[in-house]
Length: 267
Image 1 (cartoon, rainbow, N blue to C red):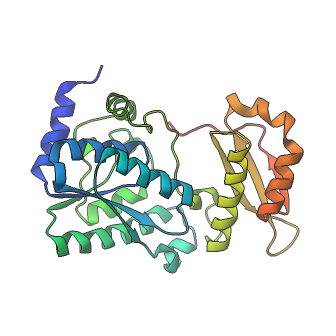
Image 2 (image 1 turned 90 degrees about the horizontal axis):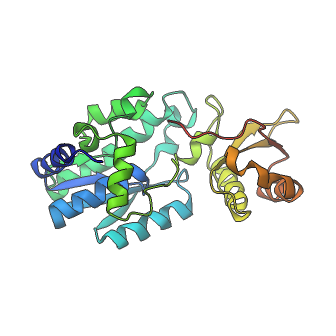
């Protein structure tokens, strides 16, 4: 059962920084934060979605539909992290450059419109993981109300269930660039190929999976898809391997392999 003191700390933090801009992606954490902020602050909160080639069109549409369901104002801003060579070269701290670009845009928006602060959906569990984006958040004085309240990922899901958010049980869904190994450049063409590939895999009925985008040894401009499916769904691969291979070939991949270890979501 959720600790009511944590929920109170969350609301107190939101009130102390109103009016507030929230970096919103439609994921579990940011959706919960946006919904609680709207319930607490009313019109004194604005959600902002960063749009770029690394965001699937379906994810953008779903996020906008959820914001409409919540009843909160949301705007879409175009971000240009792809133009930054530090991001496009795909270093291990790639997410830092993405978040720095996002927070630059949100900082400008907040200053122009008189918002007191910017918030994002880091939770109390995230400190246990390598999160380059948190460095950018600190540099821009972006607050993390969920983390401030001490709310873990499971507690965020619990709040989401109480608010009847469809994201309560949703798997993590990082940006499309996360499918490309560090050191392999991130390009708009690669991201589009990944998006087409994952849309096809989803059309086959799989729910939790990744299409990893790997450079193929066959030659320049050739890419191999490594498909990772959640262990509990891997039984479904037996009846559609040929269809999977042909669909991913149509998406642009020269070769397809299935990871026998499957895909496990990060803790």
